[in-house]
Length: 220
Image (cartoon, rainbow, N blue to C red):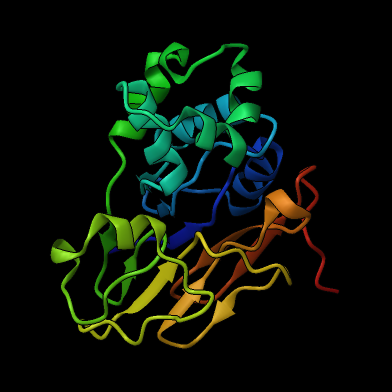
């Protein structure tokens, strides 16, 4: 595969941070950008973040994964219960940004984007999931709850049976740094809690980070 392979961590409605990363990365047509999920909730501008991702798909190969927050929103859109839980986990900010009172009122283009998200992505050297994985199972046999909801905070999974390096989000790294366990890298560096939105070029290890206001991190 030609071009770069770049993973972007949990965006959570921080459109300024996403725009800054896109400007810094300058994606080209042969690049692949894997967004690991959780595009909305908690942050101030979910609509713009989703619009910017939709536009990004016209510049490069975008592979968006479905996060647990995205799954909750879709479930509510399709009539499932759980509205109060979702609101308390950042859904209130999403509805405020859209100026509506329920996920059923969110624009169809954004629902279509979320419904088109993948469960996982795999390349020759890497696997990409939102949250975690069972190291003994191939990706097409994984439980959705593990892929989208399992935390690696108390117990990180071992190396995947494929031998590939796992790129995940979901479990926030409050020190603002990528968690690097060699066989696993967690790139959720907490933009929603005063940290950074992170992008990682998985082949070279190049890192870009932007804060909630879109200021790039200067490593000095």
